[in-house]
Image 1 (cartoon, one colour):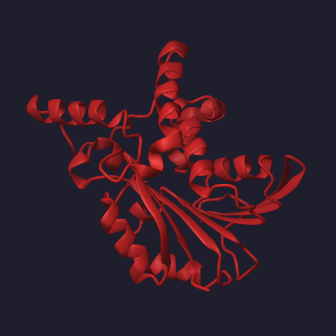
Image 2 (cartoon, one colour):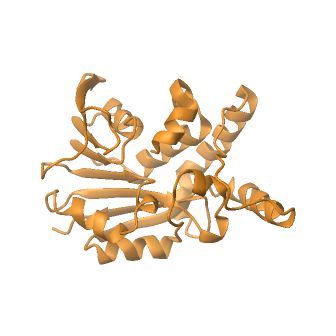
Length: 238
């Protein structure tokens, strides 16, 4: 997750509809297969690793060059490390949650971390969807690009990973977001000025949006049409 978004939401991140829904989608995408050691790239606060530790993962290593200092914590009785860099290890799951859109060489970054994990390790990757949905929010978060599902799968294929499954998420809220983008363009709103669209909502709006997105979780893996986020599950070949 982006540290800028962490700064906006603070302690409310666990209650925010967007992150609650994305954590639920992550668990659905991974399925029942056990997770032992998580390598969380661009992890920020370690939000998603913490969710997996609470669900039974044995340990997590969060990597982010922006950490002020490296340290280790205990979450749900299990260790979680926060480091600026890492070496090869026994990681069986690599998370790249909204990371690849920030770098110039997305294929190279995937290859870099694929070289650190054993055969069979899974990769769960999310990125923002559709370049035509570009807005000031992307500028604020310093994104380089947005992706379609085929584009993201192509990146992982060129990086040498085996694609297991790909889909879109936030499909039910996608029409509203798309309408807002189009309305902004019609009204002449800037798509290049840096401005975050993430905010703390009142409880009623927050719970309504959470309910809409969580209702999508049981079937979102079948959505290969449209959504705000691309989800891809891949694997280091055996």
